[in-house]
Length: 206
Image 1 (cartoon, rainbow, N blue to C red):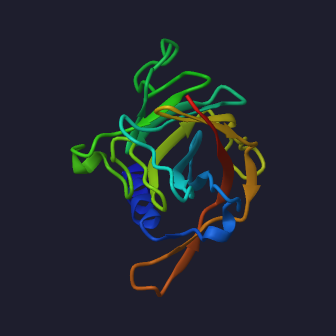
Image 2: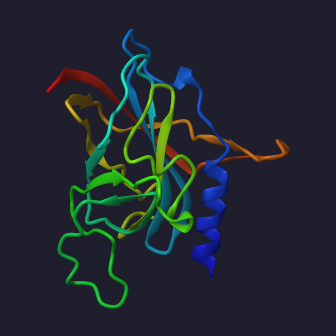
């Protein structure tokens, strides 16, 4: 029940996140900014909301949509996801009982289709990977076998962002000021436990 309650809180908070354009890398062509917000700690890791913002002025991500991948620095696993899924589960044979969503050291994530059941969605997800200029795509991820404090958790590294006929280059993962969230009635402000940013710029057409 506690994990379900935490997930519901995360789903509500992400609907009202504040992320200004000044936090994006400024350039004449814009960029794709990936934001990794740690929302709650769990017994063996954390729950995060990952968002991809299209700050490119004239370049959309068309169907069949974007793909995002990264590398874990330890032996992290993905227990569950909402609003997206990994393309492969990998070898989870060492687990008994609860089986992780993914045990791959370098997972690849894709968006879910628009007709995804509502209980499997999060705000700004499920567009089939299509991402128009000025919009965002998001998913929730529960990470296990990870650190459980700001001092022991480790950032994922070596991000890759790909799209149909588009090649992007992603910079290093950076620890930035935690994202703030405003309630629907605008009477309460909260913030993420930690926020990591990754900037990806268009390299060439493929």
